[in-house]
Amino acid sequence: MAAATKPPVWSDSGDAPSEEVGSTPAYARGSGKQSSSKGGSGSETMEIIKTIFFALLIALVLRVVLFQPFTIPSASMEPNLYEGDYIVVSKWSYGYSKHSIPFSPPVFNGRIMLPGVSEEPRRGDIVVFKLPRDNKTDYIKRLIGLPGDRIQMINNVLFINGAAVPDVELSREDVQTLYGTQQTIKLRETLPEGREINIQDWGPGNISDDTPMFEVPAGHYFMIGDNRDNSQDSRYDQSVGVGFVPAENLIGKAEIILFSWKPGASLWNPVTWFTKVQPSRFFTVLD
Image 1: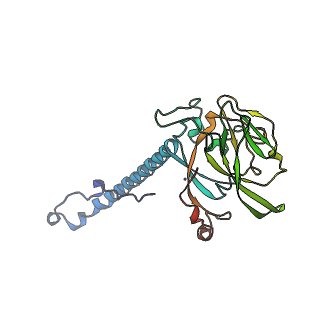
Image 2: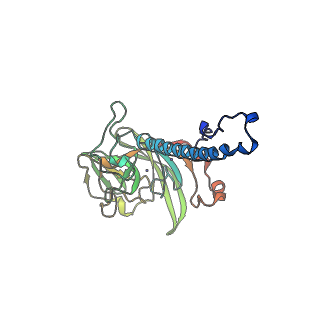
Image 3: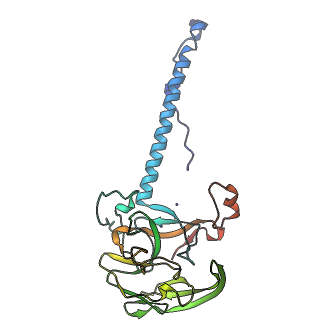
């Protein structure tokens, strides 16, 4: 799932007509300035409108082709992404689909790949995509299953293609939740290709700790949140969760946390810009 000062506009249309002051009666001078001043004002207005139009056009092109900002709305990707993080997603990483364009116009199907630039998604990528059940809502999860993979949770352990994913405990912490004091466990998993990711778990006994076997169809991906017991993802049927994600629904790869504010920060309350800011998370590169 993130302004430049415009140079002054100079125009000849607002200049007064040439006249010889000595040979022109006083009562005849100055009238041309007033009428040309009005013309100059209209010209300046058009220049401003054109400048705004081209600035918006450039911003749109950059958003479609290069980068798109997103804010994190929930805790489903903790401990790597927190609510209030403002991230940047690269649009070229997986090529382009109709969902790369605002409002997802049906201009073409599938994905357009850029040779030498775009590549197939890799297991472990943090991916922003359109929720398959409505093709409108932006979601962000970790890509765990590639086309053809078999994914399953057994007794709170992730299995990929029949092999348990090894993990190492990093820390435990008691936190206050709506349900009282609960213990969070942070672990580091090593995926089959050797890529290491940090996850968060709330211990055994949760509904997503044991699942059926999921076989990822061709042209689809399996997504799981890093906050394993607090994420509606591909482990849940598409009617209530994410289900399998078609390749066409991928928007891009999350690259960096640009800025971050704690929950409660508001655009309309400037005080919170400073009291809720989290500078330690600024410019954090995502794994």
